[in-house]
Length: 340
Image (cartoon, rainbow, N blue to C red; front, side, top):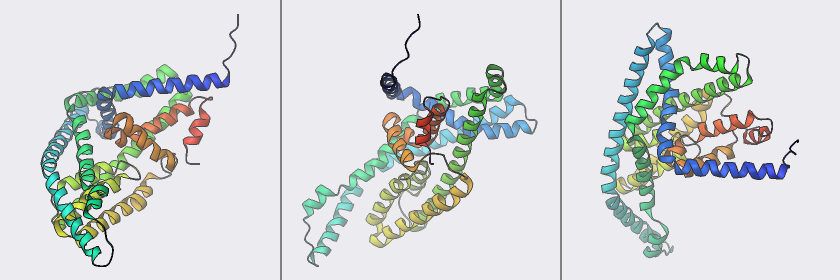
């Protein structure tokens, strides 16, 4: 007896139901999923270095060991810097908040001389500088919590690198050398790897330039602002703005409006140069995602996986787009996610 095909409306409902179940499962398992995703993308970044060593006749085991030890050193150093910055900055947040409120009181008094009457109580209710400072603390804490599993991340990266060395041949034997999935997988791997490497290099340069800029001003926590600029540069569209706000506020508290303007100008120059000139030059045709999808993916993955989800929002969305492209029934969704 032949089964009747599902109606289009029922197929849509089943698709939505599956989507909700999968996302709910990811959100519930975020504590386990986040370290694994971090490890997977760290391994993607490390794979070119491992292959470079292998191309120079370095044995596979030795190449993986060298790369893995370098990863362990970077993760360990990063974890210590983030932990120290969070603890010290969190202690000073109430002090900075009080100073900032005092500074805004001076501004409202100055405006009052020119007939602009704003009550101090209104300023306290509408302008809460502690939110911006607390946002920095939450973002850094989210990354710090993910890196507390640094040993698990290290082991996962190690095993992924071991698997990477022979995965291509294994995939060809499993799917056949001419299978469509092989081409799609290679295309996805190259796109994500290229994106992550270019984005990482641009983010490092952004963090270095921001650190130099605020360091020359004598701003407190220079390393923290450089680290924040590096991390948040991975977040498209709004990451650089989030990184700039607390640094500008601190400059306002420490040195006054002129210094705050100079700090803001520095963030603007660095991010415009890196985001609109340097990055597009090396990124080529771009991500293949529309601007709206990039922004919505940032919000969505941040809600599902926290700060690390915001960091990985673009690669994760590219995975979804690739999966949609592989099926004839869902290809139209992949087209809607694209930039053309």
